[in-house]
Length: 503
Image (cartoon, rainbow, N blue to C red; front, side, top):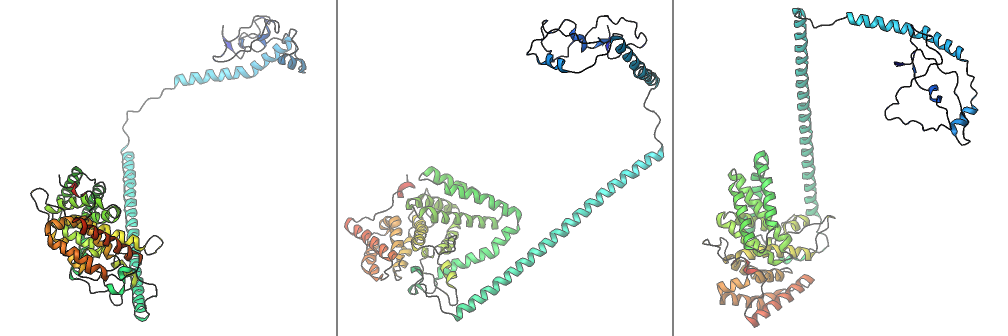
């Protein structure tokens, strides 16, 4: 039995109107409405089911009595639909099929016959030479246009880059000119007007203004030459610049992770020496030594200033590197003089015409984020931290079969120079810091001479301090107590951790 919407045209009307209707199988996944025999009779589904060809639609929907709560039954009862008779419905559907379905059937048959006769196959004939030439010309033109576009784009980018570089150069030149004019104006103002009435920090009081020492001038000139000659050459070479930048990070992490352990000290020193050995040229080698010195001094400024015992492992690392690369000594001195001139020692002189800000910067002062000068306590702590590294290096004994390239002699020179200068407010704190780290090593090295020097500090040098600032009072009191304890016990009170480097 065939299923379909239309009647079979050739046998239209031959089947009986009362013949049984055959429904299609329900669609997969559809849900048939459940109904009971009490609601509909057995032939009620024929009204909505698909018909076999030639089977007429039923004249009406037989309806059995429905329960009062059935919604479908209520809708059927309320509908005002006029149902045609069986003959009329049959005739109407027959006319519709003859009028619409038969032409469609004929057209479909003609289309199928036409398609069956139509066959399409690929041509084996080669393309005409003119066509191939035309395609080739078109492709060449497209490639030429692409090349011209790339060249135009590249020329445009180069022009934009040149314009940007020119604009940047002009801006830098203008900024330099403004800065130069501003500096000239400031110098003229300083020459004409007196210094402000605000008192200078204790390290910059008039009594501290003395001609710069030869050592200070030497290392400042070395720093200026390094920044004017070496630094531009490193920056101009991209490969050297990249190498130095990468190695600086490794050195910083290694120094920052130092511990009071001989294993850590040797490992960090070996890593630094390996980095220096990888230097690609003398310029890179010198710049890497500068970075090592800068990192160590900065570590002392930040960490040692709050924990003096951290100076010992850092000093041992520096000595191990110095044994193979003694040039590190000068680099450390350059960095010390730049940040802490008391390592020379010297009280920085204020040059004629030099502004107060430049002078304080030269003395090692810093400004905070609000452009305010740091307090005396913070300044003195930083200076003491950097001096502690100096003292820890000079007191470090020989390591292995190689001597310390920066031995205890430099500590004696520093202390002798210090007590030959008039004491300032920060001086007692610096002397006590030095003695608490390197004092016992100097006693072992110089014996009675060091004892006499300590007596001179206690009896002659300290009473010369007349500054009444809180820093001066506290430093003088602490150093006096420190020296009195030595006079009673014969030993200087030293920081813990001095023996970490010697097993």
